Length: 542
Image 1: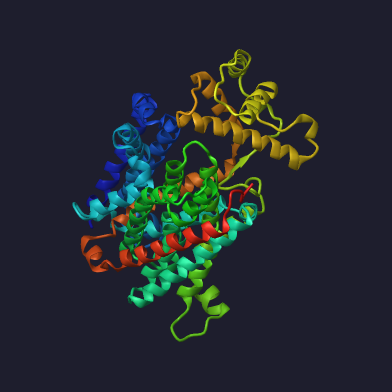
Image 2: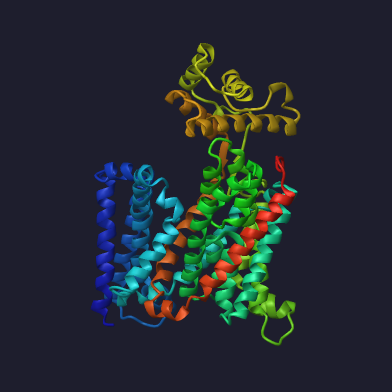
């Protein structure tokens, strides 16, 4: 590649990014951003445009004043820079335009087709990025200038997996209840080992069996991305795993509620079954709401079981690292697995997981950096306007159809101007917290009943209740920042990963992954159905 040719892509990419940043900085794109609900990222879009564009121009100028060489600076910066910026430009397009547009289109079509395509097919930045990469490589092909940068995709994905560790904690797992831990632990490990066994039976590569076992056993796409580097899964093997997970989940989302009603499952039983048997989080929530849109107990239990399954991810990563690192005919020992074979980046994942569990990022009982704070705090109070709306509604008796406990929660919200426990019980932190959370639960139930058209709420009353609930939901700024980095790493890495999935590679992969996925998925769904009916009764978790 000659010097002039190598500089042209950098000048073009830099120009595109800087021009975009200049246009965005004038607020010319603000109406479109508001329509796409991305206007809050305006400053970030401008900053990234200028920084990335500046890097491109800087790299091009450096190439102009010196001859390309083989130094570390050349190999690790100048050579991959055009490809990195090319992938990053597409990641920006996916995050700020493609994904929001798909969400809006899905919302508009929902009244016609009866469901949201975005949630059913899980068309978030992960899947969209992967699809865009596949389309590019199988149509126009990877541009020559981007080839070196595309090879960085797997390294960037590993960085995203490290960030993933900050979103989970042992404390959250410990408080989820004995049923969820034992049930999920059994079915997660059971499914993983079943898939590994089936992979050997059908003579599949260890990399294919490993990544499929994590996806089918733990939490779908997230587990697939996290485990792929551990078992050195190929791009097409990841694509097959993700396709199998999403396809199986779509079927379960419609079948589970039907079967649940046919056999007379109660809300807790169905929530436990959906959270155990359905892989994708969005599909778990959709199935729970399809079963019962009024009583949020179903959704709450389903998500608790789903969270429990996700929290097993670090354990499964270790299991698969040991399994994949074991050489044929060689005894498994600490040196061969941990020192010689253990992926270094997983140590970063586990380090952040341990730090998160120790409460260094947010309260140790958090999940994904989110926690409930019902203590007395000016920041958790509703506004004076909202208080007037709720006070008038209570005094005028316009809140019809509420249960006694729901009405009591609204009255207390008016009295205290926030969701909290009883003031005279504030020294008993456990009781104080429980009372506040119970009131929040009742307010959430009011919104669920309104959504299901069981009751009618004035728009301002509904808004005031939603704001009160939102005020006690807190997010760790540290975990939020790490999550943002993770999202960008995944968005970048998965586009590059998709570019490595060719039609030839997909055809060579065969259909065995789908067969193994269906066998293991159906087995888990059926067995968990009977176990839930046997063990789980009306009241399981608090």
